[in-house]
Length: 209
Image (tube, rainbow, N blue to C red; front, side, top):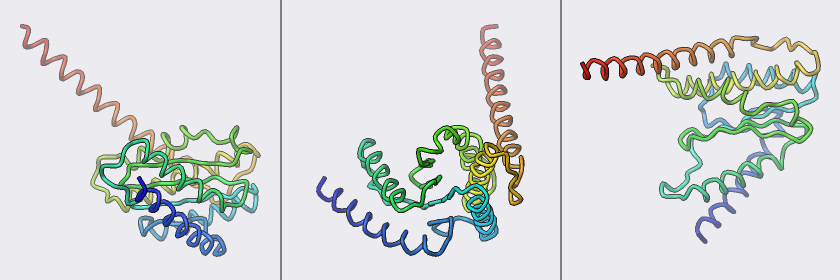
């Protein structure tokens, strides 16, 4: 437990130094571990700049390939570590803010935002509708491509959601493309589930005969 606490302290100091350097660079992607395509990064920063300019909200991304957690870490300790990790990031952000975090190997994705946006942002809608489906898709796309698509998709959805409440149209918006891709994925998954159930029922009925 002492080692775990010392690890947290070291990570926190490193994190604060890293964030202080990146925030001055006016980059809305605080960290990506090289997992986000350059074109996606440029589009994200374009959306971020317009969102800040027109809506007065800062939207950030913090992506890690892994948080280097011990394989045998308990669920409670994992939760507390990630919570503290995210809280340290949040403490450096300019309000109002929205922060999407992701730790790919740790299968973690989260959305945090300042209190004044609690009635504006639907966390589950953003993550389940625009981010998770692309990350979890079983296709030939590389992890690099999935993370790039998921982060851009989620980031754009956040900006569009805020813009909608202010009746403002963002010129950098990617429109409904993100929702369409997520809808296609969901339809495909539901279709596979239905086919699986029908196949199972058919096999059971045939065996009874």
